[in-house]
Image 1 (cartoon, rainbow, N blue to C red):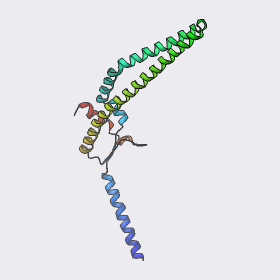
Image 2 (cartoon, one colour):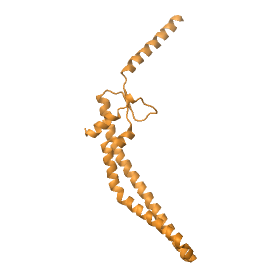
Image 3 (cartoon, one colour):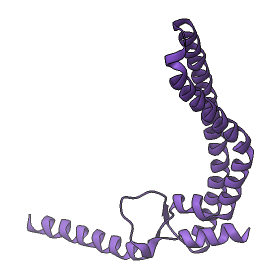
Image 4 (cartoon, rainbow, N blue to C red):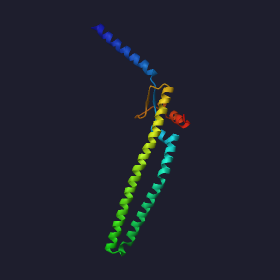
Length: 168
């Protein structure tokens, strides 16, 4: 019985020792994708492209919103002098304008989000290729993109951004 206990303990000790030795060779890295989306040149180009693509529609929405606001203020000013029929007619017009404005704003937001997701997906695909390249070059065993806590010495985000920005 003692012999089997000693044998089991020695196997456990051998297993733990081999894990510790193996763990010393195990390299872990971390990539902050939010920083890549903010700092990588491809992400900045994508953001500029989106701003140019949607600036005209955004400007139109601002103009419609301003017009709606001024029409609402005008109705409030004129309300005491208007007949009930005129007031209710203008209120209906204002409600129709508001519904149209809300619809256009929703469509704009949906279109913007869809295009933003497309652009960010391209940036992410490029970043993932670079992460894989850095991991293989520097012999990392594991690269994480999300974590609750990460020691800054494992953060390879700067390396990834540098490679992305160099265009390699």
